[in-house]
View 1 (cartoon, one colour):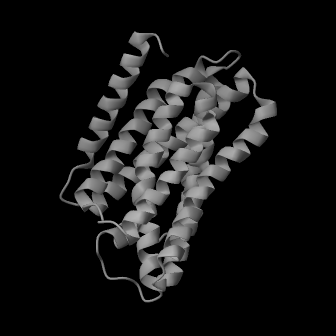
View 2 (cartoon, rainbow, N blue to C red):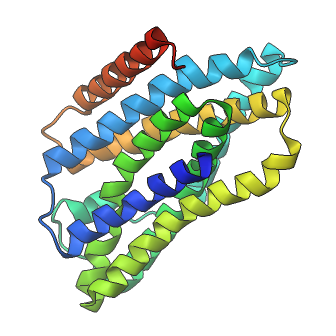
Length: 253
């Protein structure tokens, strides 16, 4: 099931790709709200579910738990600073395309792929520890993968004139997420212990918080400057909190 959830989350990139070359592109307001919604889901699950679960894992000390959370935060920011940045909001917002659009599209694919890799690890690790939390993370990742697929397919289609190439390159960025889940399964599977799983979950929680604050919320604001991404964030938190409460009340969690 964790691998299936990772596959579905990464596969959502294809939805955005098809919208970029076939269907009608969603409005910037809808995209911005969706990104804020995804950030809200990630923040609530990371801070209210994943981090507490990691801290209460058998054999886990507070120093190690919070330390791994900080490692996740710093690791994300370090990776983010090393990546080439051609921001997808410049292409989604209808701005003028750069001269070498093909090169820009490839760099954008590379950047999004590297961002997606730890998300695949996060989805798999979370679902392995708690399927309920894994479903929430997979939903949030899938939602924000749609505009990412759109951001990759649009410029690639404009550069090559080929719908197949546009969908292929968008799919590459989504496959990086699936690859992250598969490697997590192969590497972490034999090593899983309560402390190991708690440490990984704390690290993943840090990554997801950094992703939400540094990437999703600013991106939502830049895609549609007239909207407030906080509305999407609050709605995402409310919906996720309500669904978790319903699951716990029904005894399914």
